[in-house]
Image: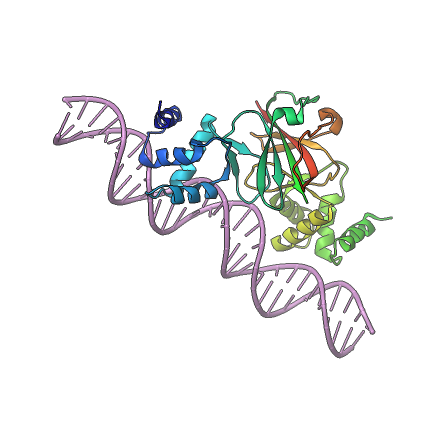
Length: 136
Length: 136
DNA sequence: ATTCTTCTTTAGAATAATTATAAAAAACTC
DNA sequence: GAGTTTTTTATAATTATTCTAAAGAAGAAT
């Protein structure tokens, strides 16, 4: 199965028609070995470099949001001027090198189980994420 | 010792002259029993309500940033369109109710110790923060 | 294949948070 | 009080993100 078929499946699952532009976005997003941390701007620039045709910024935003909603991308909670996303959607944590503005994955084993001993009536836990900020 | 003296000390420590506006900001920020989670906009509106004189938005930004730099305020890492701050600068964690956009403190005992089993050469850990997102 | 309908793309405008600017005002020093 | 430095403030500039509406592409029906 070619990766293109995978991309089309992902797009269809996200209620998006498989267009040229969206498949190009998928190439840059998902055609990699390692997990990929990015901002919309990173992604936009990579697409400009790697592919022939242009994709508009609006399309990148739309597609990333649809993938995020569907669970093919994860949003990483850090305070930065830009929003970071991650292609690794499994439950895991991050280092954030503040100086270099760089994100590094932390495996669950690297952090150990986190037990939340408090609960809020009427609410349930959606996610538990650890952010470890690094300095020199 | 009046709280005003405390405010002046905090301002001086942050390399800020104690002006009327800054003391008003301090009143709203630090003159409370419980920890206070806020965005710049929250703070700006509260100042408008609680105090007679106006304080400009730019002054609120400047003062909050100086306090943050000095360690009198903590920035809370969540993905939101606005940046959240916390007057509780001790090491602690948060619930974030995504629907209501509300932050709730988690004591360290509510989470337990977090051991980071991985390290990055040349870098040391600055902070470890847990964000627990809540849904209905 | 052709037509028709619905979704997409796109450039540019609109919005919103934050930062920068520069002149008037207040704080500090002597 | 005179002179110097820092602040305040309104406003402009910047930046990330969202919105818009017209032109184009995809899918369905014939």
